[in-house]
Image (cartoon, rainbow, N blue to C red; front, side):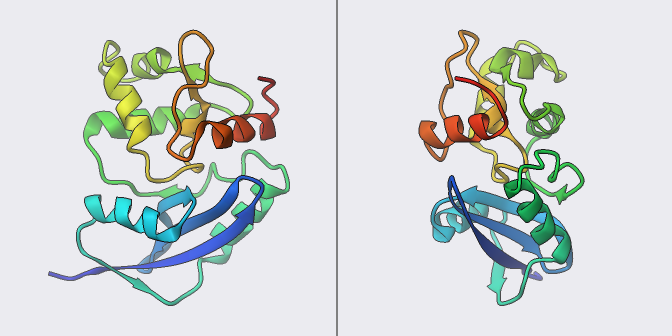
Length: 171
């Protein structure tokens, strides 16, 4: 069995350290991203990609430029970055719907479910948000509760609020 080799990069952001993981064989494809300790992200990615090596190397210029552009306020910077996340067909639908939610907009967990083949699966849609390993490229922070409150976020409610405010959403 051949091991996937991942490369990583970290970026200092107003929301904390952002770690991005890419596949060395597809260096412009992000397989993991998140705020906080790199080891935490690696532990989460390991659950879905049981066999991988973390290698020395630099992220592609395309990914690095997208992160820098995003930090400069280009909220569309991640749209063209390829992502590859392992999950059920339903989760793939949810993650794609999250990517279709434009910066500066939010949708509810029930609205997210309605954009899938299982419109009544609101809890499953919320679980897809919780299992997202490529934040903020797959912007699960844009998904909120029906009553307009933020709901949970894997990196903390304060980071979710900061990300939404960064995109121009007043809370």
